[in-house]
View (cartoon, rainbow, N blue to C red):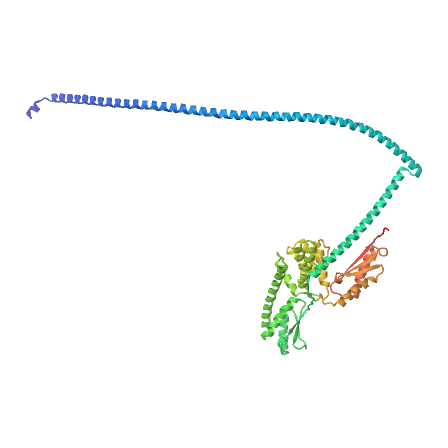
Length: 526
């Protein structure tokens, strides 16, 4: 310990510095050696990577050269193939052009030949025209000589002769035309009348109808005469309540076991009949019970009306019928005209229209629709002002019916001009159904006498050649002598005949007077 302490401090410092320098030198040397080794190693790796990169680049270059050579070879083959195809196509085009050129040469030769032939024919025609011109001049000179000779012989000028000839030809042509027209008209009339009779006859044969009439009153059987008193009630209160609720007249007279219900409206009469039957069967007759049973009967009749209308439309195969028309059709079940049930009459007319339309080859369904709806206005004619054709046509129009149906309804009594064949068929079918024996209340004897009397009234006037009652007595057609009655007198005579009919005859509805004044010329060739 003492020895160490005896070494001077400077020596120690020098030794420490020397050791430090030596350590630094050794560290530097070691670091240098290590760094050199790392550098050498990195250089080797870089050299090896460079060699690998050069090898890879060489390989890529060789692959690229090979691919480029293959692409160039492929393109060359495609070019050679396309060139060959183009060469073949050009060769074909050249061949076709050569053929066309040959054809054109042949056609040109043909055209040249034809042109030469045409020139030859033109020359021949020119020669013939010259010959014809010479011949025409010769004929004209001959005709002039003949005309001069005829004028000298007849003593007439050329204009006079032409006028005389034209008048003669005109007269002959007019006479022949008039004869032909008269023959055709007569033939057409005979043929149309024959066909019309045949069609109407077939339609009537195919339409079977019952010969029945209906009344405007209903008789109700009662169990005993004591029931009459109960129906009348104390001081007539029951019968007044019943008449007020139903709108009918109840006739209670001395006829045993029967009371009578009378009403112009057949629907109200049917409601009253049903209500009275129920009251009699129930036995409780007083104002409140009357109102209750009348309401029930009204519902039943309304339902019956609806079902009747639907059934009629179903029976005739008619679709798209408006609901209002269906109800009005059902109401016709309880409507009568001169004792004839209007619904039955409408069904008859529909059958007749259908049969005649089938014979004529027109729309059977449309003709049936016209016939079935033609009297639909009678269902409300006692509620609406106007004649039933106009009322029915207005209803049909508002319900969307076709113009043919509307016109047929409006024209079936000839109130307006019929514009279609369906309207004419409806007129004919309506007249057939209404005028057949037994269809209406009038007896056949009264019916015939009324028609005869109509004709007698018209025949009493001066200048009348003939009078005919048609349309079941609803129209009087009068034919007058055109030489004795002029247009003004005809108008006055029609009014006078209508006034005379009004004064001397009793008839339902109205009668149309049609006066015809015409001139006819008839000649016969023998």
